[in-house]
Length: 404
Ligand code: PLP
Image (cartoon, rainbow, N blue to C red):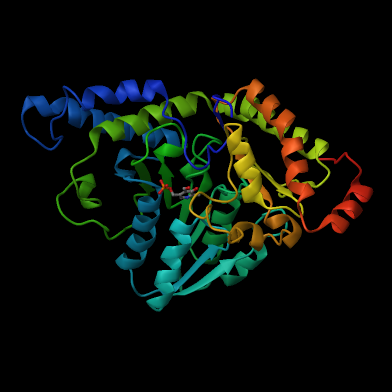
């Protein structure tokens, strides 16, 4: 057991940045007024929200602050966007999404199917890349909504959002486009105008704000029926007294993320690539699950053939190393990941697949430590695999070196 914590599960959640916490604290202490109140004391709270809205507007490059709503999380952003669009105009009953969305999107569609909606789930290739021809062929007059994630939480694979938007609008200009950008925000640039997105959701805890705050962009031409009805907050689109400290927190985190984007795209990527190569080159039964797909800079998903991912995670945990065997919502269950299944990752590797996700707080020493310790863990777990004959054959074919 080591005291050290090596946190490589940043797609599940991230550490709150000290500067975010500092920015939030006054709104728990002195500045506790309800931002809707009329007296002077409430001015700081209402101004803080106004400023935060402007920061998020810039973060996603919206045209107007009025296009930004604050929510409680990425799941609420998705539910508000999807149900909001469909409830506003109930005449169209067709939806298109992907087979690799996060459960907070997929389960909304499963429930809408029970209400009579027809949902098409677009597939991906073995690298996790979306089948755009299939997507194009499904759009018709009745398509109310297309929803595609910007980056996948398990593989980091980036979808070509601008291209998808062009395809949608060329087939049906009335079809709305929702993008779950929860795993893209803070890792790659987001520009809703350039990308032609109608609605887009983000979540603070994936980029160093606390859990419990998200945001939703709804462009001014898109109407939604609110999910939460009550007071007039968020221009009537999301009732409930605003969570001022957390809204301040997500805005501070967005500011830091925007400033740190270059670091993410160079240094975090360098460390991710080092980790990936270090693992795949040293371990003969390791395979990179995403091939050459375009990915966010912090994520890699590696399958270890003929062994169980859960056992690997337990050994890693003994060394203080945190990684994940699927999305956080499904880890703990032995069901193989729906994302890797959609990619047709061979059954020999799917159960032993591990997601590693770095952040700006990941250090070179941590990456080196994992590269040093992992081979003996894999060897230990491999030695008790019932597939010894297959492993021998794999070793004979691959030797000890792999090429990433
Ligand atoms: N979308 C994606 C791609 C995610 O990875 C997650 C969380 O893991 C969510 C949505 C849900 O976000 P939240 O946990 O803030 O509800």
